[in-house]
Image (cartoon, rainbow, N blue to C red; front, top):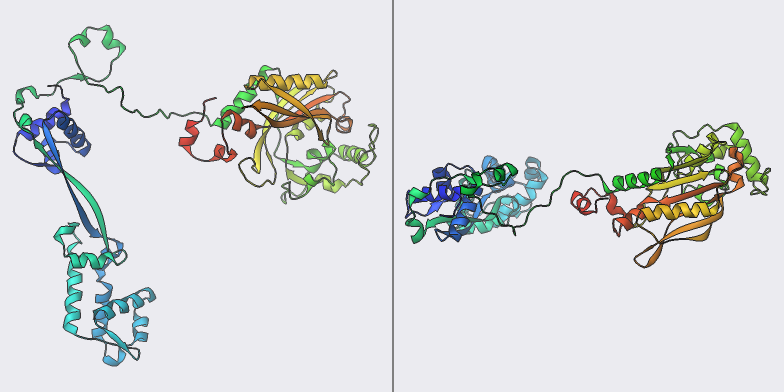
Length: 496
């Protein structure tokens, strides 16, 4: 008989009384199972084999809600107010006395319930009508609630008038549709031979050890449905952003660059003045930059403050005229959350002015941006420089094209642009789905930037947006999807 061991056990149990309509509880007891899943699965298989028929019974259970549980212990609201009313002298059966005895949320609804039973209000006094009718209805309602305190009941077994009444009152009863089943042996099932229903050893997993032996030749195999839906494995994996950062890091390291890091908190001097951004620049206002109140200032070497002042005010000896504006050293000391990772590279140059270097960094930066599908106030930037005597623009462009090619974007172009701290300046575009998309800025640091740092060598520099690159690689339309705690959506993203 081509059925499994669970089906054999259930069939043996039902053959102990072949004419019986078996309930779930009966089958659990007879088979010794404690999980109804076995009954449901085995019963379906036996029905498909023509050995069992399944009958569904639909009904509605009625049970007490939270307010109903409370009423079964303390009494219905109308019963409690009626009891109070009978205990008072006629002159004390007033609304004011009632309100002082019961909570506000009980007094109003309670009076409404009693008025529906025949109680009236005359000059602020509660007046009872036919007391026997009121008492009879309250007792009827109380008995109904108490009858449900032990266990739920089938709606067809209850007083339909009471069910209708309490269904209109919040939280007293709960109506829940239910389905019950019975399993009955068919003619074919009743004629099954119990002698062939003993459990047999069935192989559910084909292993190399099994195939290497001869045991599989006479073995019984559990049937497999190769078309059945299977769950998608959901083992641990790096977050897509972490995976992308590691990919970028490995590419730059492979290209011969070294990685540098820096602090989130910087001075305005290193974050902006060192990059020849004028102190009147809009990016320095509170609208674009997160300034800090603790600490309000960061110490800056006086040597750099003096050099930046000369360069900003009149260009010093860089060949520039500067900005022609008075330089405020106190403004330069203000503390802020870095607005770009370029601050790391200029500090690296200042610390190593005479050493050729090719370095990069991947770090978070902070700007006061309105959150939308392409902007966040906190995001990642890919920063890098080439600092050596022969650094030039073709070297910069070649480096960026190589990087993006390794990232899967072979078509790269650069366009002239303007940044306060580079000259020439170029923006970097990649071709994606037939469109050119801008992913970052780059250029050669101006002498106003490099000479105060102690070097006269050219510096190729770039700053690229990581989230925008992630949107292309992961095919996202909204940058916020990267940071939503939706494990299912994150699990569907490509593995990098």
